[in-house]
Amino acid sequence: MKTNVSQPVLIVLTVAGFLVAGLGGYFVLIRPQHAKAASLDKQISDTNQAIDSARTLTLQ
Image (cartoon, rainbow, N blue to C red; front, side, top):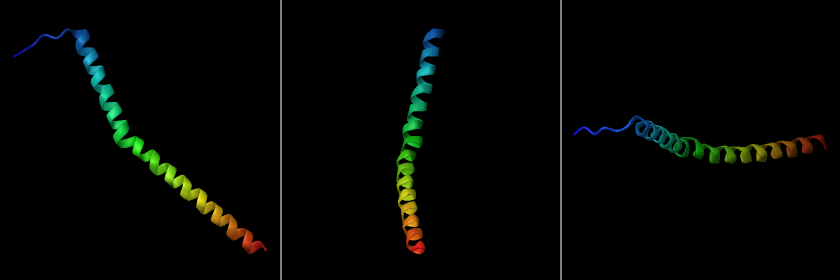
């Protein structure tokens, strides 16, 4: 069964499909990495503090 869809409707549906795919990709692939990056930032900060403390102790 073939239905005739006007060109503007087809364009809108195509753009909507790309937007949905893009948002889905963002939420599945990119957003979870932000949590990992925040965790790594905390680990880096803690390690830098430990290094600073060790340097202070060795200079005394």
